[in-house]
Amino acid sequence: MNLTDQTVLVTGGARGLGRALTDAFLREGATVIVNYHSSGDTAASLMAENPGRLLAVQADVRDREQVDALFAAVGDAGLGPVTTVVNNALVDFSFNGDARPKASDIAWSSFQQQFEGAVGGAVNVIQAALPNFREIGSGRVVNIGTNLFQNPVVPYHDYTAAKAALLSLTRTFADDLGPENITVNMISGGLLRTTDASAATPEVVFDGIAAGTPLREVTTPEQFADTALFFASPWARAVTGQNLVVDGGLVKN
Image 1 (spheres, rainbow, N blue to C red):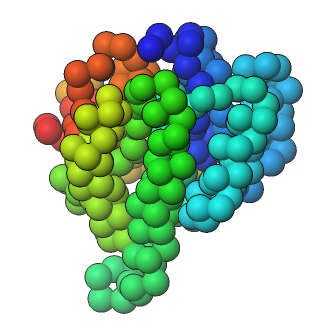
Image 2: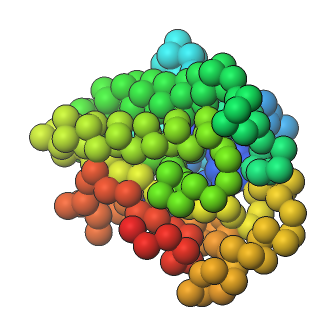
């Protein structure tokens, strides 16, 4: 299905990388559903700026009832069915390696929190989207991952473990849902320059990453978001269960 004919749900779509994803799909003519948790003012502004093409709906993706209500709101607004979901929502995390707990003291509760957001949230959104996908006979799922489980240069133990589990979910769901013409893929970035989550990162870290990439630059949220367009587009109709690393060539996949 062409992007101009699609209704795309972006979780955590009001700010940071989510905002870049939202802007990319709007630019290509899609209708966008922006899910947000606490960024109500920003989400309201986005909806006012894009009348008829963007609907902002509050929901905690960790809560299945709230996710179901989100999809109901899309239907009530006459914007459904949802054709693509982008699982981008990030639960309370700051990308500052110096301030993160190390292996000797990180609590299991930190892992649980990230698993509930990354894996639990994705499961809730995908399952809630299935009636929409089945209505139109196809669907696209794009999960947002990280290159850190291939190149763990900073001690984001909880975040990295949850994203690695999300990659496993991507592959098993791709196999299970493929016969229904539903594709499930992942895009894995490194540190992005700059999002709300990476704002605490020291400049020297950005410079070091840039020096280690073939492109000699740190990937921007806008560059990363463009890749999601591919997975949602007809050009990716035969691609599923894949993890595409988008980090300027820092990690060779």
